[in-house]
View 1 (tube, rainbow, N blue to C red):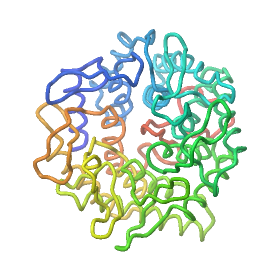
View 2 (cartoon, rainbow, N blue to C red; view 1 turned 30 degrees about the horizontal axis):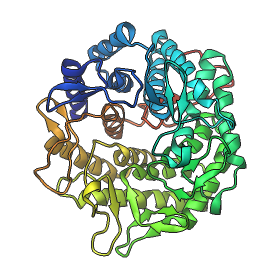
View 3 (spheres, helix red, strand yellow; view 1 turned 180 degrees about the horizontal axis):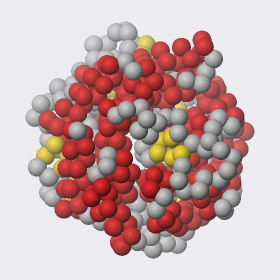
View 4 (cartoon, one colour; view 1 turned 30 degrees about the vertical axis):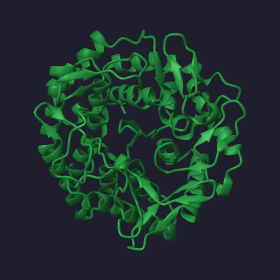
Length: 455
């Protein structure tokens, strides 16, 4: 299968030129460490594990597992993004443990989880965004408004932390995220919307910027997925999701002059008519949530999901490379296209194919596989280089320059979702698994018994 070959190619080049670094730089054939993971290494290893396993790339999986056993060091000193470490490292380790039952993945996940706990030592219990994994010191991102925490960051811990409590028997992880939920359900929402910045000191919103793209995105996703993962018992999460989606439909969903449905961004009541690539996950999320709604709402939400996914497909179809830009606008005459140079790049992002995968599984309309195959062909044509896959700086030219970065999420998410789009539905069935926001599958708790490793 072509997509399996692409995964093997991405992995083999990472292993050859960058093993133990966080990402491969495929043009210069070396590794990149970056500063997001606070001295942790091997982001691509951890992100790739479950994809290698699912694709039955057994030899490659063993190589990755061996690196985790022998070389994955958690005693590091550096500033890490709580959010990124949680979704990539904890998510990847948990998923691989649940898929394989191998203890090494569980013990590393729990040990790393412990190191994240000091970030929650704030007056409200809303964690700060950056933590030193050695000292436990935490602080807010320098660029975030007035020392605030970011909705998509503190709102995207729930799934993983419940599993950390379940596997460790230590309730502290679950208590931390239940407290975040409590703060968010109590705080006043302007027009029912959740702004992107909250003060971890006062527990109030810092400014009224609302986005379903970056800064907001995965908070909404984790509400519906928390409910699904609880086997539909976490009714608070479902209500918060339903109410949030209703406010989004009312205030942010728009139709362009050319008939394209999109979700605008909201800045203190003023709409910005652009949509980021990151927001393109929302087609899949809305379709997933619609499955469990009463008839009229189910149909409305399935239509909305299909329309948003179609708009995101347009952002790909209207580019010269058939890959989508980082953000696109809805101005007269240039709909679903990036007008600013700073928004024209593509960094191997997964959100559009993620929505194709969900809409395929939930409707079986052939167009979603057709659209997915267009992406496979475009990746091969424009992003594949001699030693891996690279993002491109401009999707609107057929001779793009490469950004020299094979993102770890390309192996965790983009290739996994493409593979699942062309698999039978029972491979990681949506009845049994929810995907964290890095596409790491976590088991749905179908029993009241504690999961004993094997789902």
